[in-house]
Length: 295
Image (cartoon, rainbow, N blue to C red; front, side, top):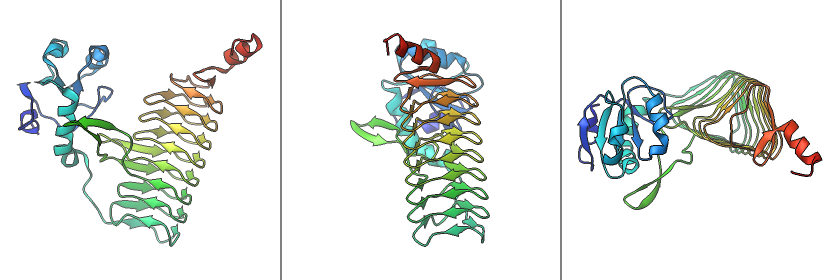
């Protein structure tokens, strides 16, 4: 879809037209998407991108947009972006509905709720009482989903349109890999802006965990009770996240990293790293601070 067609009827002036195939924030590396740019502090993200894409920007910030990007000018780039997404997001990003594919060996509790279309459930999958599996969810062989857990549904992406607060629709998917275990009362959001929220092969997600949109959990991870994983965070293979830890959005948690119970993580954690505290710092430094009376 041409940018000019996408923005037809919206309060924006197209300066450089270009083909657009999706939407995303400035952290989206995929080409062909529409971004909004309303704060000069994020210019580093804008100029780090490559390939064809389009940008909504204010007139004051237009000079920061690389000349090979499509460009449209408006007063409130984020609001115009959200209006365009509400008009065209489903057409560009939602998968075509398909009949459910449920292996006969799957054990689905009679009180579980499975969407009427666009669900794949593999062999020997177990789904507990009152669990809800929305459309655009795939559960691979030998995985299990505990009672009252919810796979799919809109995540927390909120914007203002015409003075009213809205939850941005999520047209992405959820993928539970082979042998993953999801315990009870777990919430796993759909991906957003064409993304997929993924629970890795053999990983175990404990009770009362929230997995936000576009999170990627690697293989054989342990996500322990009451953890909150912010949107678009990537958890490396073998990582262990302790009870009640909070991991902010957009972070990278390295392979075999450890996050101590109750930690509030606001920065990436290196491979094999171990962080503790609020805000989390390397565990040895935290212990050293305790010994010095500076915790």
